[in-house]
Image (cartoon, rainbow, N blue to C red):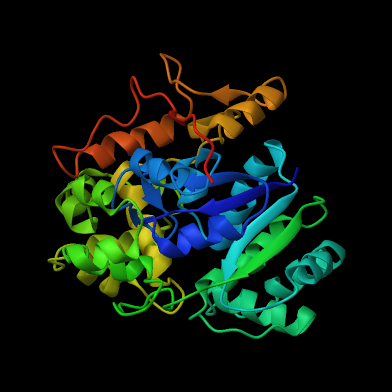
Length: 367
């Protein structure tokens, strides 16, 4: 049977995500971001609730991406997630994209020319952001042209690189409905951005996602809930360059901007430049929020939940991959667990995220 991997955030889980799971084949293993997500912000609802929604709508096994995989630029995000899914035995990677392209061909090109492509990147002007450099690289070596308005496609290209020479088939699934960042409410498949923006509209939420009652009953957070804590972290850190990926220039810009910024958006706007994109600034602020230091990635794979089929798959691979189903005195990943503790500070009613938590189980087969 085909074993399909899906890399996701489900922030929040909506009808488009259910469509993606329905289009995937065989056993479906989801590698999902934890309580902080790739673009540098807290997940709107906690990882356990998002995992439960995924399992109720087609996923067979949900595992957690460590913090330093989940909150990274596209290439590192893709590489870390694919490495985990590969260890879990996937033979196919399914993902949404705005473009109908032969990603398998692009993966083969990267497998053949990775060194030349890396050399080309190193020749590009420093004032260009990394996404701009990546765009020029793909245009030169594969004739692929795209804009920053197609983030799923950009991730698709990162997945193509990460899967090169790994014998993993790529299955792009054309994105349905509203654009990625669209706030449109009338689309058949509303975007996650729209759901976050209009989360108080219960009618809209109910028609745009399965298990809407679970979403609406969960504590919901945004960056605003953590802004005062971020200010405290910046004020009390004697050397911000000790934080992961914070250089002297960024540290100086952040320390200057925080004195005037009244909101997280104002802070991001003041710090961002052509070189430091807003997405990169958000990620850096997230690292500061959780006091992230560079650390090795965990060897074990953290299980958030499974169906009966997922349980059977785990039984087959348990002697090949260290499986973490309960965190005891020894941490699975100290940084991820630290980030979970910070996440809980956003709202008083957020449930415990680590201690005593065991995988969510759905024993009935999902149709």
